[in-house]
Amino acid sequence: MNSMQARRAHRLARRQWIQEAARGVFAEHGFDRSSIEQIARAAQLSVGSIYLYFRSKDDLCVSLIEDAMMRFDEQMSRLFVDAPAAEQLRAGWGLLMEWTRRSEYARVLRLLAEPTIRAQLSEEVLAAVSAGTGRIKELLAECVRHGVEAGRYRDVSEREVAELLWSMLLGCLGASGIQASLGEPPVPLELRAWQSFSFIERALARAERAAA
Image 1 (cartoon, helix red, strand yellow):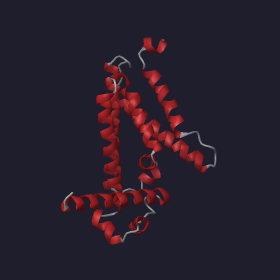
Image 2 (cartoon, rainbow, N blue to C red):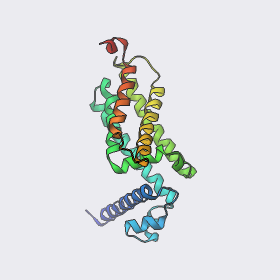
Image 3 (cartoon, rainbow, N blue to C red):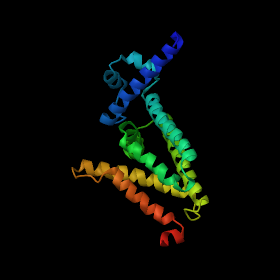
Image 4 (cartoon, one colour):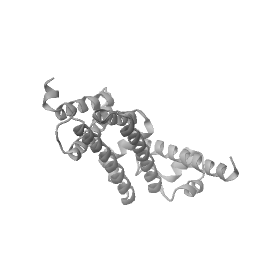
C-alpha cells in the first residue's frame, strides 16, 4: 500500500469511526438533542476533526442514512441474482429482518419510523430519508413483480404491496417501542414482523396455491 492509499484508508476508517459514534449519540439523545460536541466526545476527537469529514450534524445524519441504504441496495442486487424469482420477496424480507438484528441499521430504521424524530430533521435529511425509503420500496416491489411473473403470487399492484410491507415494518418497530416504554415484555420485533409478512404473503398467493 502506497502513501496515498494509506491516507485514503485512514480517512475512510476515521469517517466510519465518527459515524459509529454518531449512531450511538443519536440513539441515546435523539437527533434534535444531539450535538456535534457530543459526537466528538463519543468519538474521542475534537470538534474541528468532525468538521473535517462532515459539514454539519445534518450532513452526518444524511451520511448514515445513505450508507445504510447503499448496503441494503447491494445486498438486494445480489439476491436478485442468487435467489429464485418466486422466493425473492421472502428473501428480501429476511434481509430487512437482518437489519433489525444489527444495531446500526435498526437505529436508522427507527429514525425513519418515529414521527417526532422526522419532525426534527432538516430538508436535506428528509430528502435523504425519502430517497432511501423510496429505493427500499422499489426493491420490494421488484420482488413482488418477480413473484407474480413466476406464478407464486396473483396479479397485484407491486407498488401498493411494497408500501404496505414498508408501513407494516415501521408499525412493528413502533409497537415494539411503545411496549418497551410502558415496561411491558415486548413481543420480539422479528417474530411480530414475520407473522405480519406471512399474513400478507398468504393474501398474495394465487388462489390454487392458497387452497393447497
